[in-house]
Image 1 (cartoon, one colour):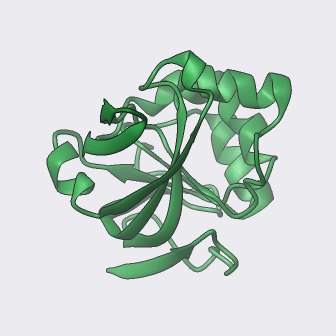
Image 2: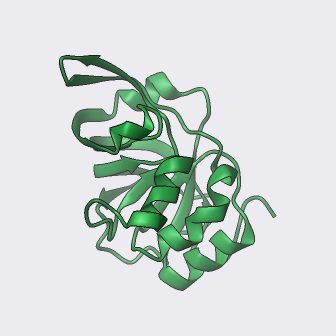
Amino acid sequence: MKNIKVPVEDDLTSFKIGDVISLTGNILTARDQAHKRLIENGPPFDIKGAAIFHAGPIIKNKDNDYEMIAIGPTTSMRMNPYQANVIAMGPKIIIGKGGMDDSVRESLKEYGAIYAVATGGCAALYVDSVEKINSVNWLDLGVPEAIWSLKVKEFGPLIVAMDSKGNSLFD
């Protein structure tokens, strides 16, 4: 398993479908409404080189002291209408569950990015890799839809399902 530092500064074109990776650094969560707002309003911070996880975490909130309880992938195809435009903003790794459409495949090729799948049902496993909640943006969308910035260590395993050459495990 290859560990990738995020935000990504390295070239990801050497990764191919089927490769198993993990991530260390900072990742972001974003679901449907966050993707829509990213396109409408722009990101609330620089997302160049980011890893965006299609996830709605379970968060315990006590006086704005947030604790991550679980974080698992959500179905990525729901982000198809937005994902190509978001990839154009600079993130290099998209993480989710299931496949994505050809507009995403073309965008991954154009921008040298990859799509990796996280295993559904492993929310308790993935949360063990979360060291800290750095921040939250757009909490007005609700806890699952907000953008959570997370410090992670060896977050995975993740499987490269769509690479930057246009290959897809879902073909």
